[in-house]
Length: 221
Image (cartoon, rainbow, N blue to C red; front, side):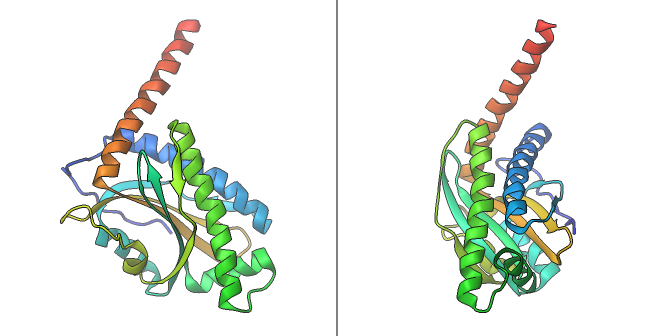
C-alpha cells in the first residue's frame, strides 16, 4: 500500500527533516483521532500507515494515487483556510467506497445515498484531522462543506488557482484500511507554496515550544 514518493530538492520553500518529522507527527495525531471516529462508525479497527510529507509537483502527486488505482476514484474534498490553506481529500477506489457505505449504513442502493454517506464520513474524518492539527498549532481553520468528486487523480487534485508556474504543492499522505473489510483509502492534504511558507513558521514555533518544555522538564529534575 505504501507509495514511493519522489522528493523535489532545493524548492523555494522546502522543509527541514525536523519540520517534516513535526508535521508528520501532527498529521499522525490528527488522523489517529479521525480514525477513532471512523472506528465508531463502522465498528471495526482502522489501520493507518506512517504519514509521508513531501513537496511535489501537483501532477506527480495526482499520478501517485491515480497510477495505483486507475481512473475510477471517488473522493470527499474540503477546502480549508486560515493561517495555512489548502485542500483535504479522503480518497477511495470507487469499488471500495461501496463496501465502506454498506458498513456504515447497512445498504447503498443509489448514488444519492452513497454520496450523502460519503460526504458525512469525509466530513467527520477530515474535520477531525484538520481541527486537531490546527489546535496543536494554536490556530483555527475555516473548513468548507464536503463535496463528493469522482474521476482520475488529476481531477481530484486540481487546484482552482495554481500558485505559480511550477505548480508545487505540499503533499501529506496517509493510507488506511479497515480490519475485516475489503476497504482501503487515502487521506491527502495539499497546500500551495504561500501556505507552506506560513506553515513552516508555525512548525518552527511548535518545535521551539516542544524543545522548551523538554528543557524545563530536565531542569525540574
